[in-house]
Length: 306
Image 1 (spheres, rainbow, N blue to C red):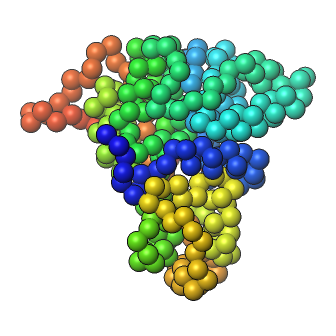
Image 2: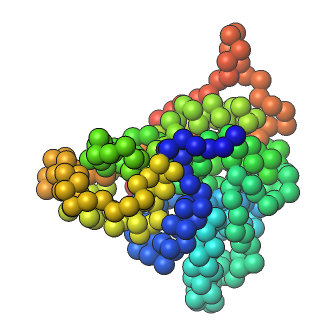
């Protein structure tokens, strides 16, 4: 079935956007590093000793460094859709001091990079013990295909650990653009409960989901748009406007966003959805009397922040 919905992401545009942003990414990826750190904290509560880990949507390698530090005996495979992201990660590996801890971690992992689509993994079935995916799933249009691929690649008792973005992400920017024209201007994201349902449909057991909102602040709307461009996260929907926005429209958008200013700053809200689940020996059978599956939603762990 062809994907024709105007709010679906255009995958070729996603690749192009992240390729262009590869060298500016680390300077703008404040949220991405914070979410990766908070995902890592959740691993403190999970008993698992993976020997091969897939970092699905690895970007410039920040999460992979943390995974190698936590699991020093594991092979970590970095996989990303954008070849320039992998190249930047490789350059950082090559520049790392060889005598220090980072040098040892990077040197061990240098060969393990794949440029590929997370919905079509170039991996054998049952070949990894853990799939880690931080802020990559939101770029697919339906979660079932990517979760089915993660399930296929995982060994029995393997762990899927992920973070993605929910529908309240960039709600202020959505408000500013609402009604400007008939085009889509902000990427749309899938609800946490729909993600949980997709995990069950694709065979994962005991999925656990939670959500939190992280608010970044800016001096003006240009700062918001600059950071989104810097990380390659600007509008890549199929229904996007292809021409330039007129000056009058931009003034109206800026004025609507500026009305949301708090304490002198403009907010940019991100709804971050976290989840983990296991690949069981057989498909999970925990059901209610009406046949519906059980999904657990819980508050995030109350862990200290650095």
